[in-house]
Image (cartoon, rainbow, N blue to C red; front, side, top):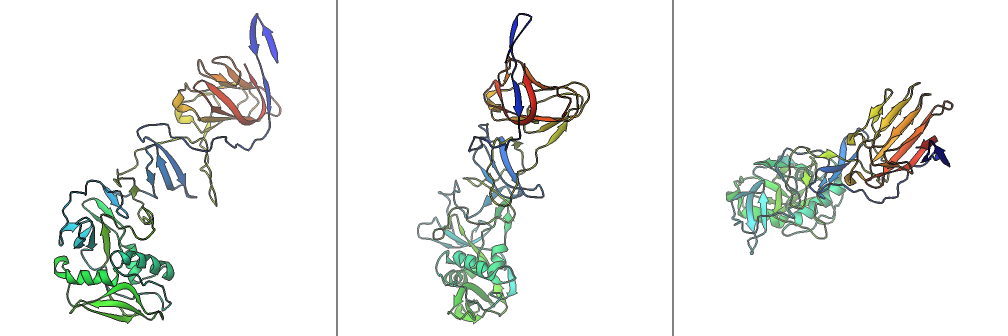
Length: 398
């Protein structure tokens, strides 16, 4: 409705707001920075971050590693095209024991045995781990650990193994195939392996599930042994790239939550700022973290750090909540104000900004004494315009 007061035309709109579902029109979350300094975080039910992404497009797994660099499946590495790989070199968390004809692909053995006596599997069920050749041990290890589940056995020992060398973290080790184990025997001196033990391969023998292939390093004989036998394990990994079949890049699970990017360079502890997201789609048994609440019983002047917060006012006297000055980078930010007491609550816009159809630097208020409670959610939709997106009660712009 239109009112004329002391010769000045003012537009006052009384908004009767019911409960709304808070659904947002946006279908994406925009992180408004060009330097990676903003970040979106999902938390589990203990408020521990489980996934996050920054405005450079980098994705993070659970937690943070103290390593300076992380190599998962080895893809996307930079600065390795001119590297000269030689058998016996320390590289990639271990010692190189095989180099391909192009000199660009290698197999790396751990520097010590991961077990001096462990069975091949939890039980005698057939697993289907029959793949052989270079890098085939990785596929077999995934198959065995999937079929055998948790436990103490050869493939799981390698799946669980990780090492940090010179600040570089490696977590993609596997139990070698019998072909890879044969190559490892050939270079046992270069790797520094003993010559008197029997080592498990990742290859199942036959279809009954009773035996698995092994190599006796006292002579290099390839044979099969009962899967319940207790023998040695030396884990290996591929480098600098070891893509297997149709597995995508970053197919490895990362137990210690190392940082992953296109170049796989880890930056250390979290130095990124939090970001207020205007919308998010959550499927399954997940919830967004509860919005922070700030009391404003004596009034409050908000800053950009208050975006996304719920401001509560429980006062018998009139109070004012002043919105911050805004820029285009703040578009999408929200503020919720909850009135609990009988006093008038006014939400005041900064100079040259508008709340719905208020004047520049105008305000919106609720002065209801009964029912005293009311709520209001505002979203910044332009660099100067706040829009009402939800709430309850009678709010009047001025």
